[in-house]
Image 1: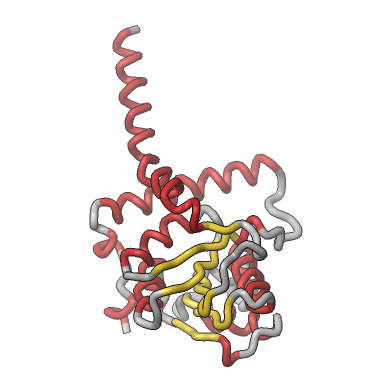
Image 2: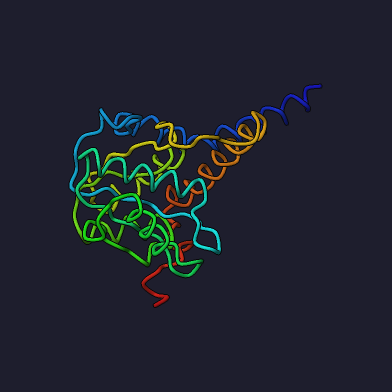
Length: 212
């Protein structure tokens, strides 16, 4: 029995250690994350972090939610321009997102396209070359990590949790699917946080500039 308790204690300690950086980031940045448009402070740039689009150019729910939020923020006067950062390697994400924004009434002149936003680190680095302040547009699970990444690049940023804006009519097939999706995302973010903590994220990054 004692050996079992020791093993259980070790497993619990490892689980706590695994999630500790992710939880810490959530606490550090919680005051910089908005959950509604009204309380969001106006910024010149909104930073739309790209995500997967379907082969026919249709946006997935995750990507559309971010794009819808960016359009809403633009039309509400909270942002003046949208920095769309994604990759053209897989189904031309940047082009598809920009085209969708135009259909939502955002002028093409208000869009700044970064076609080398292969990962979140790339996006923050490229945005930092443009300006040092912006509003990060993504789901709540993603924001603590990207706020940290952008801060590391010298960007003073805040974020808006697009999943809290009620933009998706249906979220998941059922409560179990929603639970497992959210749990998977939290685990993924915890795993992606550790390379940053250890200073190894550059080795895992696809380093967009080196792939041109």
